[in-house]
Structure formats: C-alpha cells, structure tokens
Length: 271
Image (cartoon, rainbow, N blue to C red):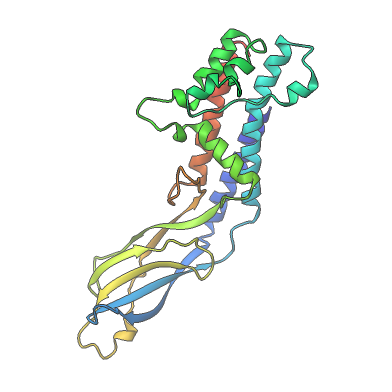
C-alpha cells in the first residue's frame, strides 16, 4: 500500500514538473557588458534568469511524502512478517523494528554491546526472510559500485536530510550553456554556466568574448541569438551527489525501483 502511494505521488510530481516546464518559465536576459579585469581585450557578458511563473512550493513537500512512504514500505514489510512469526511480540519491541540499511558488512552482525540485525532479528524472522534482508543491503552491492550509491543508501540519506530540512529538495539549476554559432557576431573565447539555483534574477551564465574593433561602442555588444542555457529540476543528495544535473524524475524512479526490488525479494522469501 505504501509503495503504491509513493508511486502515485511520484507520478503526480513528475507530471506537474512536465506541465510547468511546458510553460517555458525560465528565460534569460543579458546583463551589462564589462571589460575583463585581467585582459582589457576581452569582454565579460553575463546572463541572468527571469522566472515567471515561480516554481510551485508544494514540490518539496510532495518529494518528502514520497521519501517517507518508501521508507515506511520497507518497515511495514518487515513488521508484517515479524507479526506472522511472533504474534505475541510486545508492542514496545514492535515499535523498535526498522528495516536495516547498512553500508558496512561488519555492522550486520554487530558487537557484543551493539547487536546487529543478524542477531536482533534472529527468532523474529524466518531464516529465508532474514537472508533476503541481508542480501538487499547496500554492503552487498555490485563489487565495482559504491554502497553509498545503492538505492536504499540514497533513500536513507534523503529521508534523514528531509527530517532535519538539511537538503534542498527541489531546485532548478543550470547545467549547460550552448550557442548557435552558425553566424557569430563576436568571437567567443570561453563560457560557463552559473552555479546558483535559478530563482528570479539569479546569475545563469558568463560568456567571455573578444572586444570587437573599433571598440568605441563595446558596451553595446550583445550575443544574438541569446545562448541557450539548459536547466533541470534537481534534488541534492549530500555526500553522494552534490553537483547539479540529476533530475528529480530520475531520482524518484531510482528510489521507487530500488524499494520495489527489495520488497519483491522479501516476498519471494516468504515475507
């Protein structure tokens, strides 16, 4: 049930993002042209975002709902199985049950002072389900992949960040800058997109051009057509993906599929 709710909420969010993009809400305007401080033969042309309408506020809340539902789906599957195995389990112990997500194999067994899932779940889960839970752990990820990039690791990082409001859940960021150079009006030396979130008035990109001759009216230099600045809806995953460029839809699909695969493996084991 929780997984279906998460899928439905994710589809709603992706659909709204597509509708918002269709409005062409982020355009770019050229700012004042200045001389390059280190080379007077070059000009600096900056571009800024003009956003209308603004990105809906509820996107972040919807993303948080998906995260919470996916995390709950894992816990509910484990609790449901334990209930079938130990019908008289005290409520206090049931409330402490949580699907483990571990990136280090030694944490599975734990220590004499801090028991890991292998011992804390022994007797509560069938051996088959306990093996399935172990096999789904990020520490058993593909040998050439970082366990931190496992879907359950990413989900845990985002859920924890969302609880403490430490992550920018959804933002528009520039990720590429391109030109129609079929008929250049000036010589382009270099260019780079900005690094700030694309709120109204934010710096979106900088272009360095050769100062034309004669240079009397270099202040009037403009790039025509205006360069194309790509942008994407981005969720930041601190410590995993800090750079922009991964779309919200991609992250949602990645997380939903990861949880679905885990639940399928648990179900196949008898959960």
